[in-house]
Image 1 (cartoon, rainbow, N blue to C red):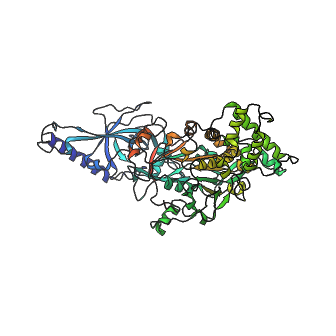
Image 2: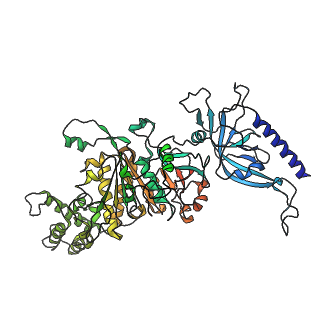
Image 3: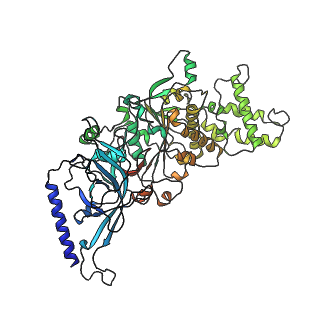
Length: 625
């Protein structure tokens, strides 16, 4: 009997729906036909819109149950009030499905041996979606042709019981509802459970907000790149593929307004403006030698002419950067003793001991006792003062570690004559840390061109600079990268800098395997680097300095730096990473992110709701890994 009644109700509803669909009713929200999936129900629970927890439930018609999944976006029209002079609703609530459940609506039981005696059929169950409200979208009937007719506002009232519920299948509507930028750096396409939405044929492109001077929209806000980004994912999740595609979008002719450093104005000795417009320098620290491929075109057979046309139509930059007339591409490799540089068309550079002048912590392999630390610092200071004195026997316009080592050995040789200290044990401890150290001999001062000589060429505006360190291992790699990063960060955020070119250039510093260098470690050299990065993260917007860190263990990144990452991109993660208190995966994705396929990701950027994306199936530059 119950089944017969339900069948009659369903038939009646389908007839009503069919009749409604055949009517020529004008609507600003797209064609409803085939998009309706159910209606709002208040049978079991009240409809509540609350400042904390809201409760909105929709009954899903059996005809459309296969079309509805967790994460789908729904729209619910508010009824037209008597005061409105409109033929259709101009306001809709937009929500996301957070829960789906079956509940019995007939007198059946399946708690018995052998299962069902009689197959009850799906009509014996209700299928209910629990909806989290996101925003209200209104339609401006007077909007001009060049203006978006949609406006987004907060949800301030519940929908009416019985209101029809529709899947969101209009790109502009969905973009407005979620406050997704209309332009910027392409990150991927909107998706639900790995499937692009609103459809595979017409997916919604998702952009990283990136206003700049050439767009004439700087007044809209700060570029997200200067508020820092973190890309996290387990091995094999597609971090490098995704990052190459994202960095490729940031390698453009766009320019950013930046202050001219006082030191540079003094050097020029002429009156210059306080600000200038420069292209972005993207510098990539590449520990696995993967980003050096970005200069070349993709080798993927799917990179067809029609695919390239589709990318161009969506304003997605693609192809090797070397072929891009708007951007330069250079590879610089640190030259270390007894290592071979295998990258073609790369320029080598040496790590000059000069860097230690203002970064003496680079010589601290372990935390020295206070008196030993003081002895080391005094020795370093005396050496560089001697180098600056043309009348000194040590006078040398190009300080070297080998010369410093010999100078320090003489200075720390005898407690009775040493000007550093009279304590023999302190002298011994200082000598053991800084004199004739094998790694320092290998690292410093090898090659004709020093990092300091090539600074302007390496960190040129409008250029992608890749610095591979795949020929280095262990502590040598960490020391070299620490020297590089200290040079960049100190001259980017410091005052009275020695290299104002860095300070006066908008820069994005991409650091792969970031947990190897800026973790919460006890090594004083790493702590010094972390301290610099903490300051850089806090001053990014002021100094036009963005950090882009890539890691498989985001919980290991220093906490203060991690908190400053305003854009977070999570690819597939292990469960223990997601459950860490130090990893901020949006709660609605904590379960699904552990099951993501390669290229699926969750993205949260400033002022935009977290969403699921799917990256492009093809890397936009060469990617052989």
